[in-house]
Length: 556
Image (tube, rainbow, N blue to C red; front, top):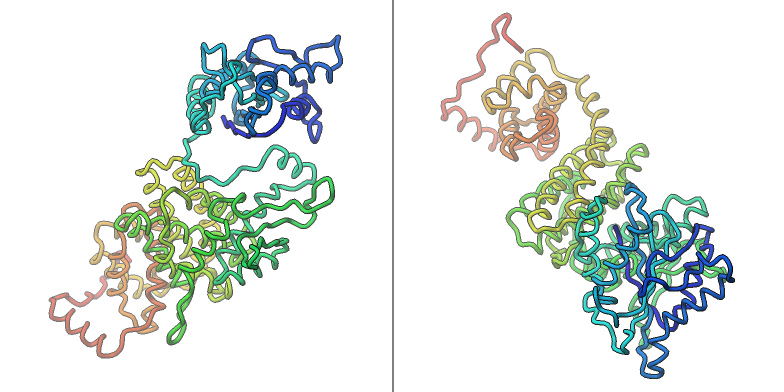
């Protein structure tokens, strides 16, 4: 159940007219009063012998009477409006149930405390199965102002109790860092225009992508305009840019003017000061020497996220998750067309997990941000899709750790967002990785090499060896070992290094996990002759026996 408090000035007349009208798209069905401050307030929807407009005027006059009595001493903000909406899967509540919910909400908010006959005047109007609107005035009947300190939090807490008492969907408590939800009006407008998402949601996604891709403020605005977004800068008298607003082409109001959204109304971390802070602390460093594969850099940075979430400060951990969110924002643009839809949904889901009340140390995640920007600029560096598959494999582990990190800090909404992201990423990972693994498997080496790799595996990891050998990805693993050997790597040493990176206890497919680790290790710089000779002397001195010959009938 979602309550949303909106404050206004003036009288309640316009609000009452809206609540008993047809709505912006004829969405108001049978509007009528379900509860009021005295139990018998005028009901424009249930007065068949009187003109509805006349009853609306009477209701608004009665609501506003305490305000009018104060005259010039009345407060500037006088209207309290709170829509309360049930979840789509909730049962349809009766008018009596909605009336009880309304009384509990106004009591929790301090508008009309229980057993207080002098509380503010209010009315609850129902014009759909799934929600009501509560309209109240912010002057008590005794002329005093209501004590509504922290009414937003108080109403949210009461909503959680209502969900429990009425057997409704239990929402997770928030911390005030969620992005602003689209209004009902925005939803109806998107539906009327045949759009899958509201203008607010579309703009939020495009702004986040521009922020993830940009290395400077100029690039940020350039990228935004390149995606078709209209941009309007807010300037101070000095000429300095202090903010910005964005609009979608074709999204206009009744006057056919663009509907503008400031960055801060899209999400708290999309205001211009917050964007500048992130850009200033994550500016790419000059590249020294030959540039390395950006996919490998992104994978390595993503693989370090679990360590940061378990050993670094909360500020560093928050910065790492923000960078991972930016990576997911850009990844659909560097992915095959068939994977983009699910990746976009994963990015939208994880967006909520990137924000909490903990200040993020963005500088600590510069490497991930820089590497993903390079991938976005040159997405086809790994034409066979292995880079994307390996990055998704690392991201799955990072998101799982993010989910645990939020759980331990009781960030309920962020934890739920990470859980939803995992489901999306698992789907797209299977879709992306399978063709790559099949292509590797058909290039599997001959029986003698397979036997030798199995021997190395049993010696290096006896606990998981048989499970890996029976895995459907075993042939793919053997292929990447053979390709690494062809480049000069030692297969046994590579297996040892790959196994040492992280336990395989929780791996769904240990052979698949090792395939990606060895693929990346095998594409790194091959050890020089001196290093290989030193390693050979070390192995000989350690007493490791050479590989015995295979006997007929021995398992390969």
